[in-house]
Image (cartoon, rainbow, N blue to C red; front, side, top):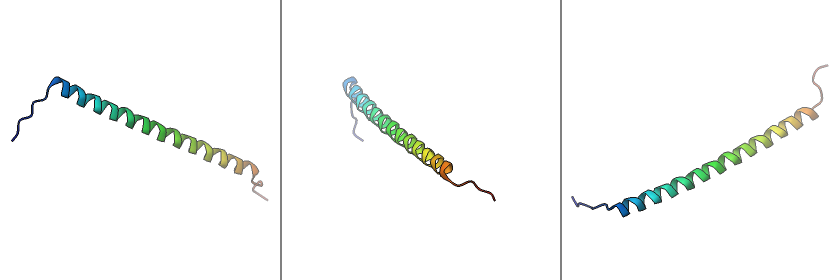
Length: 59
């Protein structure tokens, strides 16, 4: 088995890379949530429009 020396500089660089990855992933997930919220709002508005324009049920 090969022994690899991890210096503080290497550990810092790895931590920075992981941090940037996690920031990017968070931004992607936030955008996906915003897109879904927007889609839900549009569907709710559409459903409300259809409900208001539908003829009354009954007789």
